[in-house]
Picture 1 (tube, rainbow, N blue to C red):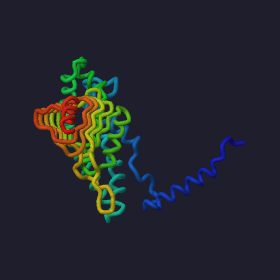
Picture 2: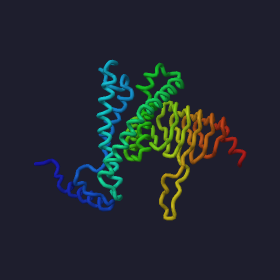
Picture 3: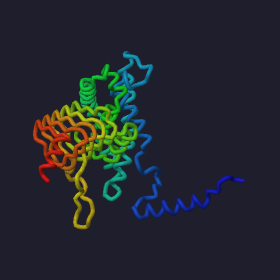
Picture 4: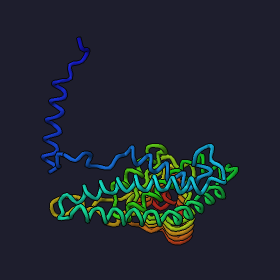
Amino acid sequence: MAVFDTREIVSALNGLRADWRESQKRSLEPGGREFPSRDALAAIVEQLKGALFPMRLGPTDLRHESEDFYVGYTLDSALHALLVQMRLELAYSARQQSRTEADIEADAVKAARSFAAALPGIRSLLDKDVLAAYNGDPAARSVDEVLLCYPGVLALIHHRLAHQLYGLGLPLLARIVAELAHSQTGIDIHPGAQIGEGFFMDHGTGVVIGETAVIGKRVRLYQAVTLGAKRFPTDQEGNLQKGLPRHPVVEDDVVIYAGATVLGRVTLGKGATIGGNVWVTHDVPAGGNVTQAISREATGRGN
């Protein structure tokens, strides 16, 4: 005798799936999977990390004389696998459009080639990020330690890759790549956020950076910093308006200490310092300094 009789559960789940697909105007996926795969993208990102940093994030038995062969082989495998995922997203987004399979294939190949061509630039940005972390943390003993151990660097590797996908019109793939890092590090960076070179998140846990945030060069954040939206505009029917600039602009050389919350499309001027646990909803001038004491003092004067 079977311990579980799942027939009624299977039937109920079948009905729920059918209702959902009908309400969302989904196809029955007769040709197989309709959506990109989180597991496939996780494997692709691991391959890309190895190709970008072969002697640190590649296989343990890799030798310098085999480095180029490994990078070439790994890139070929990762890019072909990524092309499959790109096709899936583009086909999914084209369901309501009059686009042919040939159009989708051409767009996928173009996106994959553009992504591949961007990888040297991504490696260059990441080198600057790693150096920023090493130079900015007295506890760091080597750049290798930073690359292998720091969650902020892992999150940035994912972000640099995800941001490229986002810019190529592949927001679902980008979001999956970003969320893989979020689940591992507790650092939540939307792939749409623009982040300049030499970015360092010290400790990093709990950092949140919104979609339309713009971050300049050599910016440093500490744990639990939020660069978020103050409000969410709606249209006449009460629906959220998506894509509007609603997150902060952080100019070059800004430092934001632990627990600070910066909300709305405000600008933190070049070289500004934002103290820990403050709530900022207004512009801060270049070189400005916002601390809890100043905030309390300003509040007291206003009463």
